[in-house]
Amino acid sequence: MFSKSRLFCLFFLGLSLSLQAQQHQSWQILFDFDEHQITPEGESLLAEVVKFTSQVECQAIVLQGHTDWVGSLAYNQGLSTKRTKAVQDHLRDLGIAENLLQITWFGEERPQADNVSDEGRQLNRRVEVVVRYKPTPEVVQAIREVEEEEQVEPLPNEPVVSDLRLRLDAQNKAETTYNCRGDIIITAKEGAQITIPAGMLVDCDGLARLSVEVQEFTSKKEIIKSKASTYSGNTMLQSAGMILVDLRRDGQKVNLNGCLEVVIPGPKVEGMRPYFANSIGNPEDINWAEREGEIRYDDRLQAHVIEICGEMSGSFGINADKPIKPGKGKEEVLLVKVKNLKGQNPHLAVESASGAVTNLRLISKKEGRRSQVGYYTFPVVADERLIIIGDYKKTSILGTTKAYQLGAEVLYRSESGKLRTKKIKRLQKLGNYHLIRDFPKLRFEKTS
Image (tube, rainbow, N blue to C red):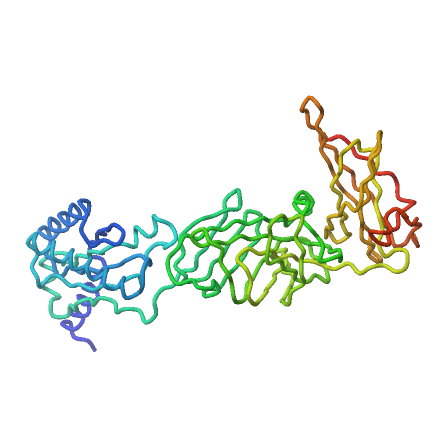
């Protein structure tokens, strides 16, 4: 059995540890960028520290120096040392006893805020001042024999590396600093996401200004509105979504080498493949190239997840596409004929039953005195229902603009049997085109 004296000691031991955990007061002395001189605000806070120590039974004053992540690890270790010793010297000048001061420094390894924003880096440029004191002389005297001095935590084995997470603004742009550590994770406004692993930027060896701009065509409406190319050479593609990315360091183009992951929201379409463009320029002129990589559909995200590896430019495009197999015989290439639009060339697209979109090309235009005729190629997809949609704008001589939109019309149903076509002799030099004879006349309705 425990004696009364041993129970008494155990009681005060527990009380001591509890009081020690509670009885401390801390201040943060912030520093200017790449400086170790104490600011006027810092001097005011250190005066508060000295006043506080005169009102309690001070046991120790622990000083811990920190920096933001700008600069090398070795440089930041040295800078945090200078900052800690500057605070130590200032407290000594204010009358604090040498034996009360305990100092240590961590460089950039223990950030308390992000190192991406200016505000976060300012909070990381600090010296933490922790005053440890006894609660009352009476309790301290009773438990002095069992009290243990709290030790400063040791340095971590590995430095803390933070990923750079960028959420783009309403214009799908962002600009920040990047020190070539951690992954770059970019989230666009409609949900597309690009992950660039650490080390993928070629010749990235220090802090620089990183700018990102994304064009995000991840819905039927945006794909059609963009008029972006859905062609790989002469092969027509059905797109479930695409993004164009322009990444620069200090305004200069960059190169990438590694494995890139891109999440493109959009409808689930079977048979999708990753297509890539190493130069984005005008979206209407992109020639997509099929590229080796992994593509899968994530039902939870409702998006295609694409991984592409290898060397690539920092200005690139990625597309979730399905190549359209050419038909047989006369159905090899078909046309849509649009007429009587009085000088306006509508943009047309074809939507598949699964929601993929193909933007059509204007192959030829014939202008007369009273009417104009445009011919657009369109794909024939076996056993799949296609719908044609489109729009155009017309500006009068008075400057008034009116918008016209084509309602959804069925282009082809596999159950209807073989299409009736007519060969277009005047286009023979451009290719073996056939016009759909039994397709109804396109009717555009005014929307504004």
